[in-house]
Amino acid sequence: MSILALPSYVQKLPKKARIPLQTCVYGLGAGVVTVGFQVGMSRLYDATFVNLSHQSTSIFLIGTFLVLMSTSLMVGWLLSSFCREASGSGIPQLKVAFWRDFGFVPWRVVWVKFIAGILSIGGGSSLGREGPSVQLAGGLGSKLGGILGEAKQNRRAAAASGAAAGLAAAFNTPLASVTFVLEEIIQDLNSRMLGGVLLAAVIGALVVHGLLGPQPAFTLGNVESPSWLVYVITPFVAAFAGLSGMVFQKTTLGLRAKRKHFRHVPAWILPSFGALITWCLGIAVFLTTHRLGVFSLGYADLSDALGGHLAWQLAGLLLITKLIATFSCYGFGGCGGVFSPTLFFGAMSGVFVAGLCNLIVPLTTSDVVALAVVGMSACLGAVVRAPVTGILIVFEMTHEFSLVPLLMLGSLVSQAVSYKLSKESLYDAILAQDGIHIDRIVPPRDLQSWQQLPVSTIAKFQPVVVADLEPVQLEQFLQEHPYQRFPVIQKGKLAGVLTRREAQAALVEKRSPKLEPAIFCLPARSIKDLQHLLMESHSGLVVILDQIDGNILGLVTLHDLLRAEVSTAERSGD
Image (tube, rainbow, N blue to C red; front, side):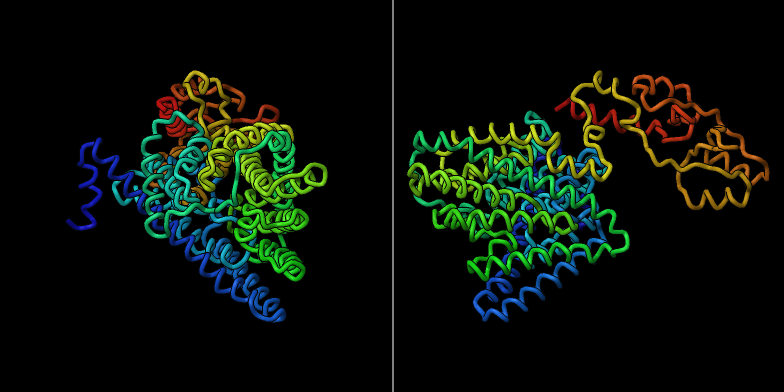
């Protein structure tokens, strides 16, 4: 059987056999690419920063500067030249692709994310690998879905399965990967996709076990059953860790907003600004402590904290410098995620608060380690707003069941801090900052509630409008725009709707085109009202007008309505 015949062969299989087979392919592909992603950045980092740390001070200073700046410039060039959607964590972008584009992710996102992520994180930028692994694996799952014959409008299961397998392989945490995809991307713990996501996550975990070994991501020191004193201190650690996460979120969003005003600076240079700040902070820390935690993932220092081998003063220093370095790298448009950094912030918060408390009441090394783990879960949960994932991901990475009650208590406190200081998670806030409001993309769970939403929820707000009906200009206009229907403006007012067929016929017959009557409404009208207006429209299009001056704001087609209704029906079916 040739590769060209594979899609038709797979699609002919019975549904009960086809879906598990496809899911296995998604999980296997996502697991392999995630392991390759992880190995690539680890080898680059070891060959550069780790190797240079054993050389003389001057060689380390010059070598790390050249590595960090050159890789960040290459990353900036890749992102600005080929795919801006591959910048940052990638989880918000995958979330949008899942809901707005039915799970379709362009191939360029996958290969750019793979190369740019290895260069960025392996090259020393203070960012995480897990978010990029989710986007990378979800994008590959979408691509594999196309190879197996799935249409662009039917790749949500492929993207979700790939994302779960990718996170399971990145963190070696299959349970947490399932809850994260359900909580953050699908936003429904009872989704009908649960079976496929679970199967893909298991396969992703098996891939990383087979290729890298079954060890947990971190190894704890000797942890005993938490004492009553640890339970008393846990809310303070969780509050401090949650506050650290919120400081990171606010500063990151603030820098991203300011970055948009750097119009005179080429986009490919911007990531190097964050790299330069990271280098300055990382060098200062290395020269005083001989630690590399500010650079890249910082997992070596994080492991020392979880082993009880890190002084609380040093933890405080690493917390501050790592936080500044990370929001600089992310805010200036680098390629990397926030999972690893927030775990780092949380662990250092736990060790720091435990050290302060130890000045008043005696704490054992086991107590300090337990509080560091609480901080990890609390900080991650506060930033991502996925509390179940925050608990499970730390539990699976440490394999310490006795800490679960502490993690649950810490999660409650950190969520309270998070909701008090921010209305949205970091991911949703990033999308809102980019003009994408997630509540307009993710449909409600029932059709009745959806019909009461305003028309603006599904409207297109950058309409292509015809302003000149002269033959020469009209012919050029049709060549530049492939759409079938266009609102027409004459004398500053909406005059009607021009169809492509009528425009082409008018050009051939050398006459003035006839306009269809324009049906219009205000953006606050409900989708239920819109349905009736579309039935009245001969062109299958409704124009959205501004209430004050009557200017055209956007438009809605029958295709937009049907597409949104399919999304709602699928979600209701979950």
